[in-house]
Image 1 (cartoon, one colour):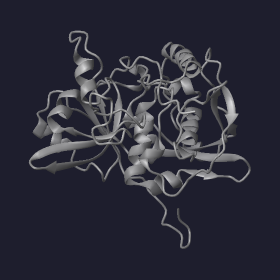
Image 2 (image 1 turned 45 degrees about the vertical axis):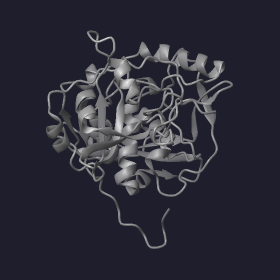
Image 3 (image 1 turned 30 degrees about the horizontal axis):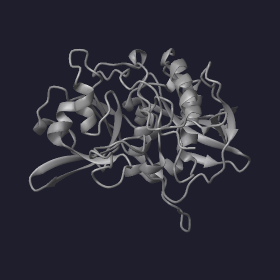
Length: 342
């Protein structure tokens, strides 16, 4: 069952240019879009339990962290009624794409948007960061950072089970085409952080670094002009990039509504896929990690004809409603072996 519609608040994530991992609040989860009562009830229970949790950054990496960890089942959020269940499907269906990373009921838009960003510009890095061990387990690479700033790869061995809810099925990150890499990447990241509740909220630079092993930057654009923001966005489509909207403003009761008509959600992370200029209008191509949610007409139909979460935002709107841009580096990848691909 598709759980892209989740009944949970979307205004409880605080994007701040000075935020540290210790200050992060829970992130947004998909807004309700007609999910059946059973799924909505489960998602509300998950959201309530997770909103009471606090983000805990992973322990500092050590030089010996590359040693494979034991088969790990990350702790599930308490009080949610979730359990682990087997989900069938191949690890990959061809080269990984952003569309295969769809956020579920966990508030980890910062991570799923980052996964999609790397898949967009460096799909081979995604493929080389996870492997099927042939015995029902998978090795997921998560980079940790030492005190001197060195990135150390950590391997987490996890089995193929994912969080499920009775009568609902898979509840966190999944793929509409049935591939499993995105949900297992999320599981590996949860293992590195000692539980799913500890990745319910975070910052994109941390996620980008964990995926690529390269330094990531964070630029506050709240007081920049559209021209200045356009400069920050240079490189979109060639390096992993994630941007976040401002959270709901207490002094502006119509803020969320203005975002809504533009297809945007307050306090939410988006993958930046590229930029373009058409007839003098500069635009930013973004993707909502929910895999849906974009500008629509009065009948609720996506203006571009496909509600896949991918749409253009005018640079004037982008500079007004987005508060930061995070850029990652390109991962080191091994050369492709002859005869090996897909």
